Image 1 (cartoon, one colour):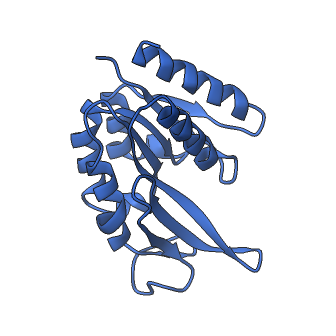
Image 2: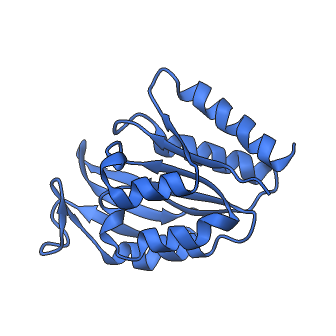
Image 3: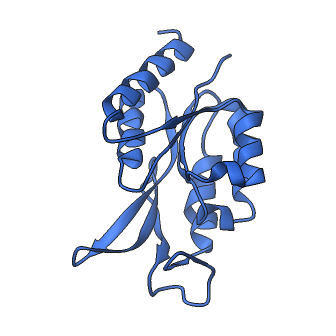
Length: 181
């Protein structure tokens, strides 16, 4: 069986999370089971204060990072990372993906990679699922992520405000093709 293998990259705010959510909704409409997580920014008073990770199937969520919570934990940029969030929400959401389902991973990034188990669990689950994810733009400089992308033959697509609709259409067509629709 052939599987969807697409990772979307691009600058913050370009629509990567929106894109994978739209594809997840489309896939559900086809009757495909969808698992995984999305990472959403949280704003207060117009300023981004952090990110939450949300299991897209069960709805469980946790703070992944925050500008003032989780002091003493590792930092990525100005955010303190809640390293337990991946173990409590992200990894269980990945592991729940069954054979032939669609796994959404938003994102493979610096915060998520602070979990020692994250890449290992992706390696275990990926062979049996369709995979649509987002990846930080500098992934090529991370040997673990670069190796993962190469091993599973992911197509990496650069998303921009100009090509968003085009990329969505390409992913939908590719999903249809691998599903034999």
